[in-house]
Length: 190
Image 1: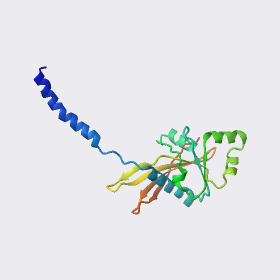
Image 2: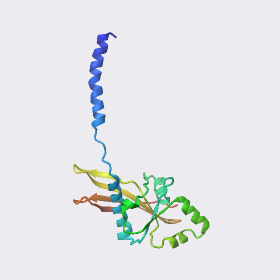
Image 3: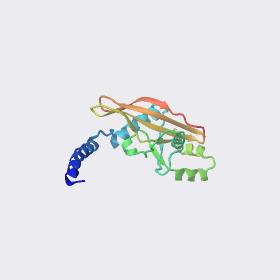
Image 4: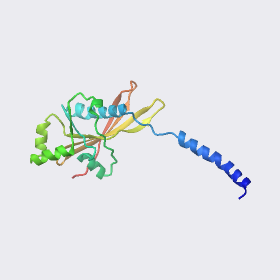
């Protein structure tokens, strides 16, 4: 190819490269929740489930980044995509006492106490079980910002006692997150 042919070819490729590069830089990205909004979505879901519905006086959270909670593991095994998120209890600012548990502390207790869940509930009698959270997912946004999100809340309350819910929350006119819907999720029998 001659020098002139290379220049002509480069001349035609340059606009294509510039347009593709500009598109990659300016393409719309899916909206993301701030850390504060993630905690607000989770808080709204937790209050709906455990304060309004079950009247729990304490929440015990699964707080093990290396292992999924038993209920979230069952969801994942049944094909539900979940991304666990460790609770930020300070940002959640729940109106009830909270406690954090890991797999190691549970294993230690269950080895020491053969009655397992019975002794666990003796330690946490005001709780509804061991609660796990997922990272909230944005469902909808408008020109003002994110207006709808969902979070999965899972609970383990015994060897064969598991529950999970997909909670949809919406941002109201005052920018507070409010629960719109609670959908129980089907967990496989273990």
